[in-house]
Image (cartoon, rainbow, N blue to C red):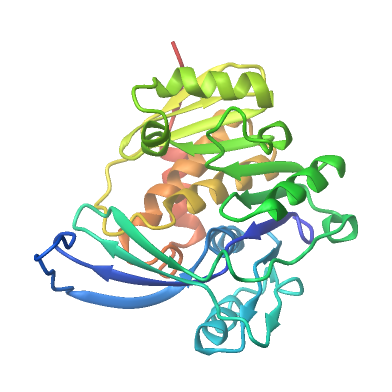
Length: 304
C-alpha cells in the first residue's frame, strides 16, 4: 500500500475511562474502581487501528493545545510511523479536548465531553487530499464536516461517515459508506425498523450502508442495494468505547485490499470485536495476525 491512502478527519483528543459498577443518580454516589487516560477521538482512533493494519494515514480535525493533554496526544500518535501528523496543529491558547467516559460492567459508556466544539478546526483543501482514496469522517462537529465531505466528493475521494442516520442530513449525498449504530438509530427514530431505515438512507446516498447492533448481527447494503448479514463473534466486553472507529478501520482496510464488501465486512467485524476487550478505544491493540485469523473465521450471508 502507498502513502496517505486514508485521511481521517474529526475528533482528536484524550479519553478518561472511568470504570464503575453503575451510573450515579441524585443522592446515589458511585465509587469508580478504575480511572485511566487514553488517546481518544474518532479520527485518531480510526487512524491508530488503520496504522496497525499497515495502512498509511493522514490525520486532521480539531487543533490541540500546548497543554498536558495535547502533549499526551502527540506522544501517543508518534508511536505509529504510518500516521502522517503534518495536518495536526498544536496551538497556543487552545485547550485540548477530552472526554470522561463512565463505563459500566457491560462495556456501555456514558460520556461527558469537553472542548471539542470550542477547539479550532483545520481547514482542508484539494492539495491535502492528493493521493487519498478514502476519507474517514465523523460528524461530531460543525459546518466544517460538511465542507470536508463536499471537498472529498468533488475530488473523487470515497467518504466513510459514521452516524449519518438522518435522511435529510446534507452530508448524506456526499457519503460513499455510512456506518451506523442500531441503538443510535432507535434513539433518534423511536419505533423505526433499522433495516428499513438503512434502505431509506441507501436510496439517497446510493452507497454502502452498514448498521451495527452490539452483539447482534451486522446488516449491510452495497451500492446496488444488495443486503448481507454477519454475526459478530462472542467476546468478553470490557469497554466498547471506539468500537465503531475500529470497525470502520477494518472495513476500509478490506476495501483498500480490493476485497468485496462481504469479505471487507469480516475484517470490520474482527477489528470491532477485538477492540472491546480492554479499556480505551485504541490503547491495547491486537497484532495483525490475530485480526487476520478472526476475519478469516467469519462469514457473511445474503440478507433474505
